[in-house]
Length: 79
Image (cartoon, rainbow, N blue to C red):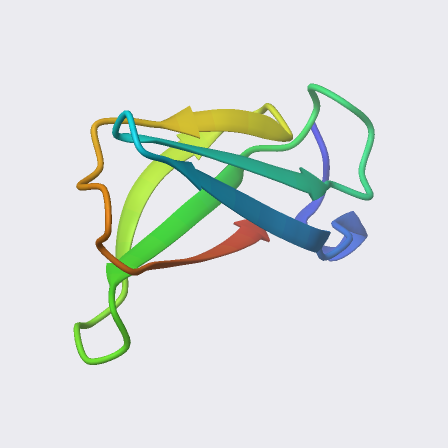
């Protein structure tokens, strides 16, 4: 396991939305692959509170189902 003081912040988060109700996310974990858990936080638009949407060890993921045309914001952190 990795000590929390050794964790590096993820960078270069990008999200792409598709009209079929799928968003794809990618980021640079900046940690050894598979050794760190990442929290994916999401909110709808910019007026709703952030909430923990999922956790993953992957640096690429699919968020589905989402509503096409809905504005989503994401942030990620290593834990």
